[in-house]
Length: 364
Image 1 (cartoon, one colour):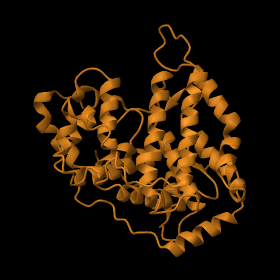
Image 2 (cartoon, rainbow, N blue to C red):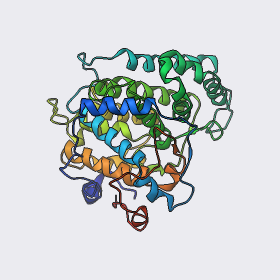
Image 3 (cartoon, one colour):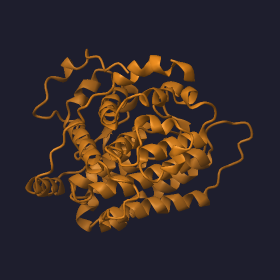
Image 4 (cartoon, rainbow, N blue to C red):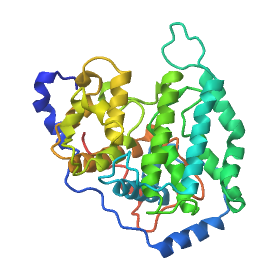
C-alpha cells in the first residue's frame, strides 16, 4: 500500500494489527539441563544436513518440529538478554569462544579486499566477484571451524558448516535474504547445543557483538557485490535483506532514558546519532544511506510501524510478523537444512502438523 506523508494516521491500524503488550515469555535456562543437553549432543551421530521442506504441506511439519521450538526459544532468550542494553555497553563480557567466532567474521571481511568487485557497466545486481569470495569460504570452511573448535567437536563440523556457508547469501543468484540470516541463527543455535556457547552467560555478547558483526559483514557484501534481495516484497517488506536486527533492537530500546519512541526513527537526524546505541536505529541508518527518496515510499512497512505507541508493542508485534512472514513462508523455509542438531523430528508437545496447513497467518 503506497502512501504519502499526509495520510500516515489512516495506516496506523496496519501497524497495530501486529502489536500487543505481551513480549514473548522467556524462562532462564536450568544449568543442569544445559550440561545434559551438551553431553547428549556430544554423543550424537552427526550427518550432512538436508532439505526436508519440499512442498507446501511440509511447512506444518517444520512448525511442529524440535528445530522450530529450539529456534524460537533461542530467539526469545536472546531478545530477553538485550532488554534495555545499549549496543555500545562496555560491561558486556565476550567469552573466548564468542570472540573466536567474531574473529572468523573479521577474517571473512578481510577477504573482500582479495576479491574486488568487477566492472559491471550497466548491470544493476550481482557482481560475479562474490562467487570468488564465497568460493574461498567453501574451500576454507573446514579449517576455519577446526581452528576454533576443540577436537571433540570436530565431528560436528559436517553440520555446522552447512549453516555457516548458507549464512552469507547464494553464490549462484548472488542474493541475500532473511533465510540466510536465519541460517546464521541456526549456526549459533548449534554452537549452544554443543556447549560451545553457554545460555544466559554468552547471550548478551552473542547479540550485540557477534550478531552485530555478522550483520555488518553481510551489509558490506550487499553493497560491494551489489547483492540482490532474496524474495523481497519491495516497499512492502520490512527490509530488503534482514529482519532480526529490528527485533533485538526494539528490545534494546525498551524503557530507554533517551526519549526515543517508535516515531523517533523516522526523523532524519536521529538514526545516525543513535546508530551505535541499538540495532534498530543502526538498521534504519543503513536503509537511509542505501536508499533514496522519502522514507514512507521506500520503507512503507517501517513507516507504518512507527505509529505504534510503545517499544513493547513493536517488539511483540515483530515476533508475530517474523513468524508469519519469514518462518512460516514456504519460499523461505523450503531452503532450511535439518540434521541432528537442528532436527525436523516432531517435538513431543506438538499437535498433528496437518492441523497447521489450513491456518492463516496474522494479517499485517
